[in-house]
Amino acid sequence: MGYFDSKKVVVTGGAGFLGLYVVEKLRDAGCKHVFVPRSEEYNLTKEANIIKLLAETKPDIVIHLAAVVGGIGANRLYPGSFFYKNLIMGVQLMEQARLHGVSKFVSAGTICSYPKFTPVPFKESDLWNGYPEETNAPYGLAKKMLIVQAQAYRAEFGFNAINPLMVNLYGPGDNFDPVTSHVIPALIRKCIEAVEAKEDTIEVWGTGKATREFLYVEDAAEAIVLVTEKWDDPDPINIGTGREITIKELVELIARLSGFKGKLIWDASKPDGQPRRCLDVSKARQHLGFNARMDLEAGLRRTIDWYRAHRMTSTI
Image (cartoon, rainbow, N blue to C red; front, side, top):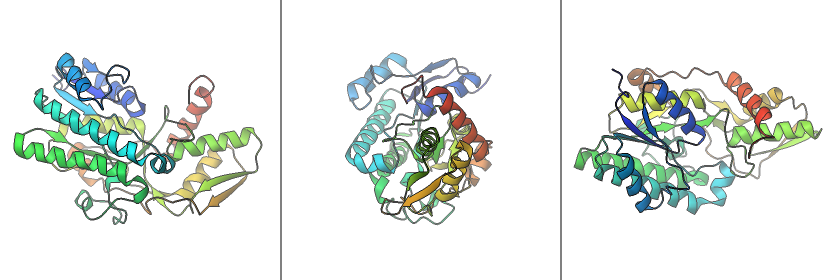
C-alpha cells in the first residue's frame, strides 16, 4: 500500500500552473482523494472560507500552492497586494489546518525569500543572513514568515508543517500575460509576436548580467509529491536544478528557439532584480532522491510549442 493510497489531500492552487501537474502526479502516486478548492467558492484570504473548506473536506494533508505571483514588473506594481494576500492566506490556512487536525501541511516557498547577496549556490542555512532583493521582498518575506510559523507550530503544537523552497518555474500552461508573467513566458511571447510582426528589434529589461535558475513544471510537481511523502523536517529544503544561466544567455536561447533573428536592445534603466540565483540542491538529492530531468533547452521547446498551439484558443 502506497503512502497516498488512503490519504485525503487538499491542494490549494490545484487548478493553477503548478497545481494541475501536482494533482496529476498525486493521482499517479495512488492518491484517490484529491480536492482542489476554486477561488470562486473558497477565497482563501477569508478565514470563514478556509474553515468551510477544511470542515467539508477533512483532509489528512494540505499542499498549499495558491499564491499571488508575478515577475519583476508585477512585484513593483503590487507590492502591498503580494505581501498581504500571500501572508494572510498562508497564516490563516496553517492555523486552521492545525485546529482541524490536518496531519501534514506543505507550504510551497520561494527562492525570493533568500537574501539579495546570498553566495551561490544558495544553501538552506543562508536563508536568514540578510534582506531579500527589494523588487520582490514583500512577496519573499510573506512566504518566509510561513517558515517561521511552521517551525513555531512544530515546536509548540507538534504540527508537521514543511517548507520546500522553489526556484522559478516554467513550462506548458504558464502565465503569458505581459503584465504579470515571469521572465520565460514574457520573453517567449515577445519573441513570437516580434517574428509575426516582422520586427527587427526586441527590448529586454536590465543588463542581461543577472543569473537565474529555472525548473520545468513537471519536475517541480514530482518534487512536491516527493517532499510531501518523505520530508518531515523543520528546516526548509531547496527544490531546483542547481544550474544557473544568465538572462542574456536565456534571451538569446529563447530568441533562437522562437525564430527571432533581430537585435536585442537592453534597457539598463530597468532593474535586473537579484544579481544571481542558484540553489544548492544536495539536500533534495540526498533525502528525496530528487533530480530534475528536463533539460532547459528541451523544456523551452515544449513551452514554445505549447504557447503557439494554445494562445489563439485560451485567455493567455
